Amino acid sequence: MITVLLVDDHPVVRAGVAGMLAGADDITIVGEAGDASEAVLLVRHRRPDVVLMDLRLSGGDGVDATIRVLAESPRTRVVVLTTYETDADILRAVEAGATGYLLKDVARHDLITAVRTAARGGTVLAPSVATRLLRQVRRPARGTLSAREVQVLRLVGQGLSNAEIGRELHISEATVKTHLLRTFNKLDVSDRTAAVTTAMAAGLL
Image (cartoon, rainbow, N blue to C red; front, side, top):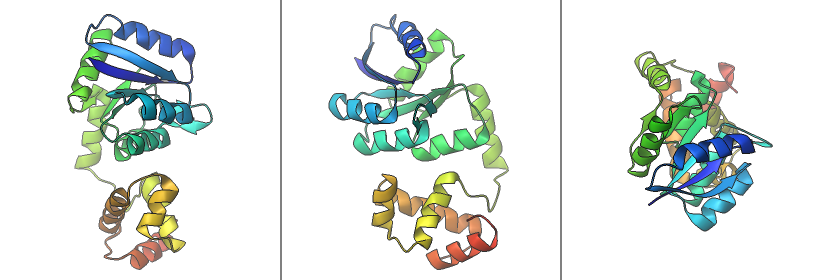
């Protein structure tokens, strides 16, 4: 049985998603959350296989909620289910660790298939989202830092270590290192000091 947690600040939306999944005999909903803190608490106690996560939450952000959920339960798969599909939103969600990105107009059959695929460890993307990601890969914007990379680099500039940055942003030290390596590559530098200096000169910080 695949266990699923629904995270959306609109009860009507959660009820609709629950209704779409109700017909699948191998999927069960183990909880519903309306904000990030509630989602993390439920993940801690129920360890769902899949979390369906909205990007816009009352008093919070779905990307940050994704980071916190995965820090609490690394085996849980987060699939974003939202109405937003900008390049920035998609990249932020993927970089935060989401294994899928679907839009709320997804058909019932496709949603059920996506949950099953995510539970097996696969990636699930709405066709339009996949197209946007491919475009980013084929034409990367060199020198453009993601919101998370900017956060990490700003804390580096404040003198924090990787471990301290991880605690501040609720991510692992390994994830901090990954963000820094990507930043070094984008800015064409080889160390932390040069990265901060270059980013400031380019107006990225």
